[in-house]
Image (tube, rainbow, N blue to C red):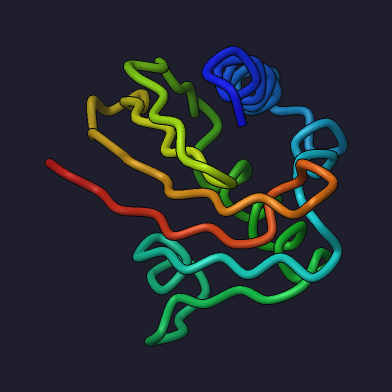
Length: 118
């Protein structure tokens, strides 16, 4: 993954979220995606905060968009790995977030670990 590819992924991902376009958001994820997030734990009432599979992830994201109608992300930085990126952004409440995204061979997100600041 090049820095330009990572930036392109980040820009499209943030734009999809800011448009609240669930179909476009989901184009970034593999069918077998795994996401772990404290927000998933809270919204879904699951202690490990783990969401597995495209259908479950879509339902979680739908719930998040409904729970936070003013949702908006401001991208701060993009960190590039060999087959991963970290998107660092703030949301509409000013909460700092870093999402580690491991990518599949097709360039889609296969695994996500979300981390939140204050």
